[in-house]
Picture (tube, helix red, strand yellow):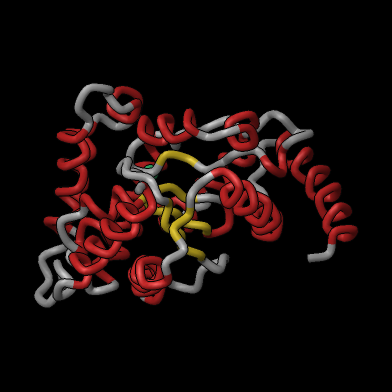
Length: 272
Ligand SMILES: [Zn+2]
C-alpha cells in the first residue's frame, strides 16, 4: 500500500468523478477499479466474509468457469462469500462479486447457484455498476459511495444494509438496478451459463424459489422492478430457446452438497 500516492489518486479520482457526475458519464475502467479498491476495504470492515478456502474456492471455481466462457473482460473478477443466511448476492465495482451463505445453502443444484453468479457477473460486465456510480450525486464522498446493489432481490439487500454499521450504512445510497438492467443481467446469465456448459434452467427455478421465500416482507424487487411473473416468463422463454442443448450440467456430482454441509458446520461452530 502506498498511502501518499493513494491520497493523490483519490483526489484525482474524486475530481474525475465529479466531472463524470456532472455529465452523468460512466467512469472509465481505471476509475471503477479505484472505487472497487475502496469498496472492498469498506466491505471487509462492515460485513462478515467467510474466508474458509474450500467454500470460497468453490464459488470462485463456478465464477471462473463462467468467465472462461466469456470474451475477455475489462476487470479481474474476485469472488467472496458473505456469512449471512439471507438469500442474496451482489456485485461491487470492478468485478467484486459477493454471494451470501444463505444463497449457497438454498440453492438446490449447480444450475441455480451458477445462475445467481452469472447474473451478478452480468451486472459488472454490462457496466451497470459503473452506471450507478455515475448516477451518484454526492461528489465529495463519491469514491466511497456504496454502489453495491441488489442483485436478484432488491428488498433483501435493503435488509442487509439496515444491519450494517457506520460506514457503509451512513454513506449508503443503495441503488437498485432498473428493470432494463435486471433483464440484461438475466439474459446475460442464461447465455453465459450455456456457454459454460451449465444448464440455465436453474435461473428460472431460483426466481420461483425466491418468490416463495419472499414470505412476510414483500421484497422491493417484487413491487418496483420487473414483475416476477414477467421476469420468470421472459427468462423461461430464453431458456427454452437456448437451454435445450445436450450435455448441459445441472448438478456437479455432489460438490454443492459437500459445500453446504461445510457451511453449516462452520457457521454453527461460530454461533456457539
Ligand atoms: Zn440484478
